[in-house]
Image (cartoon, rainbow, N blue to C red; front, side, top):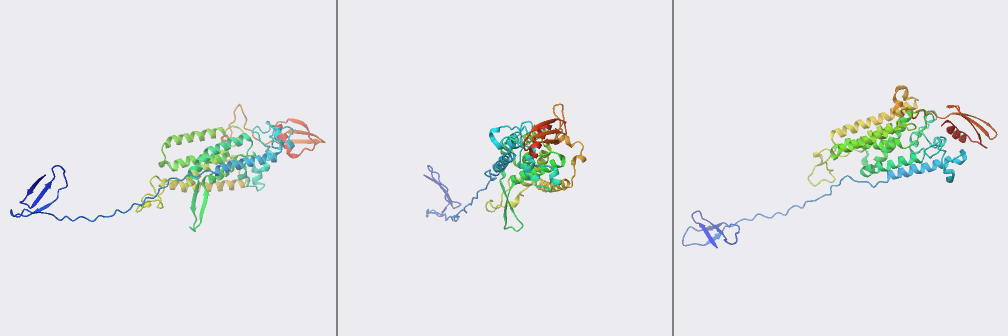
Length: 412
C-alpha cells in the first residue's frame, strides 16, 4: 500500500497498489504535530425509485376468420340445386344429360353445353332480362341474377375463383366498425360482403344497359368487383407494402386476361366491366388502411400522442371522397337510365365489341330464339324463326316450357 499526500493544498489522494479503488477525498491539518487524517463528508444523493414503464400491446392488422365467402359459395350452390329441381328436365325435354339424376338431370348439350337448366327455368328463377325489369317492374332481378348460374361448369369456375381471391381479402379486412351519429350505436358491416354484393349490382346494371335482348346470370360481375377492389386497395395503401410493383403488375395481368376472355361469344363481358369498375371504386372506400407509423391512442404508450402523425395520408382521403361520390352517382344514374328504357348502344356504336368480337370461327349473334309451333294431337311442329328449320315432335301433353326448350335446341 502506498499513500501520496499534497499537504500544501490540504488534500490527500490515497490509492491501493494492488486493488485500485475509487479515490476518497481526505482533509489533513497543516501542522506537523497533528498528522490525523479525516475523511471529507460526502453527501450521497437520494436514490430515486424508477417509475415503472407500462407496456401496452400494439395490435397489428387483425385477421378475421373467413366465413362470409364460404357462406356465399354455399348459397350459390344451394341456389343451383334448387334451380335444377325446378327445371325438371325429364318432364320438359325429350332427352336429358345424366338421366340417372332424375329431375336434377341436365338439359341437352345442344341447348345448354354448361350442364345446366333451360333458359326458361333461369328466367323463372330470377335471371336478368331487361324487358322484365323495365316493363314488369322487376328490378330485383338486378340482384337475384348474381346468385344463379347457367350450369355446373359455370358454377365451378366462379366459386373456385371466389374462394381463391375472396378468402384472402376477408382474412385481411374482415369486419369494420362504424360509429353512428349518435355515438352509442355500434354498427357492424362486412366490407368484403358489401363489395361483392354492390359490385354484382353494378355489373348487372351495365349488362342491362348494353345487352337488352339477352338473359344473363352468374356471379362474374361480383368476382370482377373483388379483383377491382384488390387493385385499388394496393394503390391506396401503396406506402405500407413491400414488392408493390410486382404485385401491381401481377394484378393487372390477371385482370387483363380475364377481361380478354369476355370477348368470346355467350360471355357477358359488360357485367365483368361494370362489376370491375364498381369494385375498383369501392376498394378506395372500404379497404383504406392507416399509414405506416400511426398508432391508435387506445394502444399508444403513456405520453404518446397519436395526433403527431395523421391516420391517413392526404391522397388516401382524396381518393376515398372522389370514389364514394363516383360510385353513388354512377349507380344512381345507371339505374335511372335503365328504368327509362335507355339503350346504351344507341350512344356508343363501338361498345358492343367490348363484349364480343366476331371472327371467322364464331358469330356474336346472340338474339333469343323465337319459334312458331303448330300442334295436332300429340304431334307438334316447331319452326325456328331465325334459321327456318322445322322439326316435328310427338309430345303428349306438351307444355309451353317444353316447347320453348325444343325451340332453343332448334335454333342453336
